[in-house]
Image 1: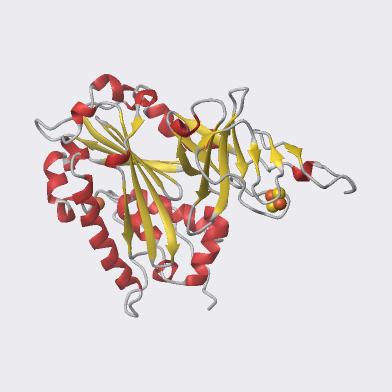
Image 2: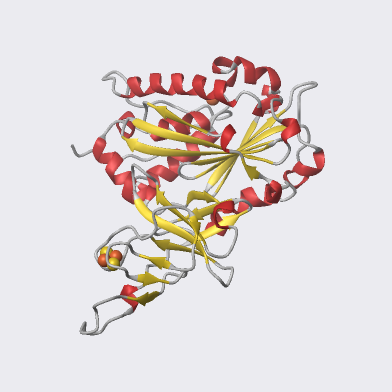
Length: 364
Ligand code: FES
Ligand SMILES: [Fe+2]
């Protein structure tokens, strides 16, 4: 079905929200895969996966949506590489598991590559003309790192440094280098709703008093605020009286005191939630127009602060969010709802997201 063009007014006081069909039309979903996700930076792995030379870590970029087989390696020269994990002969996956190796060897017909992806050797190809050529190397993929996080992108719309700049500056004093991935505190959730509805909900604290009574108790709702920047936004939660907050020195670059949490969002689908104990990374993976998988990955730098303040009950808050977002998904299919309006004081983050998304979808 062809859809009329739409725009999101840059003035939040006048703007209307995304048309409801953006959340429920499978053709819009397919367009987003190419125009939004294939050009985005994605959280790809914990840097501990390629800590020593020879270490390899295969992964799938945005499993269920982009499904690109990729591979992180650390070469003998101690440099990290991000490569296509598809053999340049007939397309087998080259590396099938984590490990420490001296080189890469395809198990189908024995083609060998260096840890930087360079072609090394192929049996029975003596007569092949113009062989080997650069096309026989494993393609390199843009990647970057920040603290314990590795990112990758197939065709980035902007440099990673630009995308992360604002978040890096505000968290410059945090002990990110000490954060260690804790698989026991990480889990996945399946949400029966469009990925963008999940993000919309994340991007406003407006619903906290209504939906999250437990979280609401530890925050000072009056001083909650949202700030937007080119590629994302941050919500700053100030701790209520007597509730756990960051040591002031850690939040000094952001100019805040008594911060309970920084909830950063990076367009289109990644959240970095900073709490006194560490960072909870949320990766929102679209699987279908009305189905989403969300990974919660915990990186801990101070285990003694776990279980306190805004970062205490992440599982409960997540279930509360899922239930409300699934309710919205049903509403987006209604004939009697088309689109809504924004609160100018409480929904700046949602408005900013919709502007970015409308821009990528060819609206304004
Ligand atoms: S597919 Fe890899 S060597 Fe043939
Ligand atoms: Fe919520």
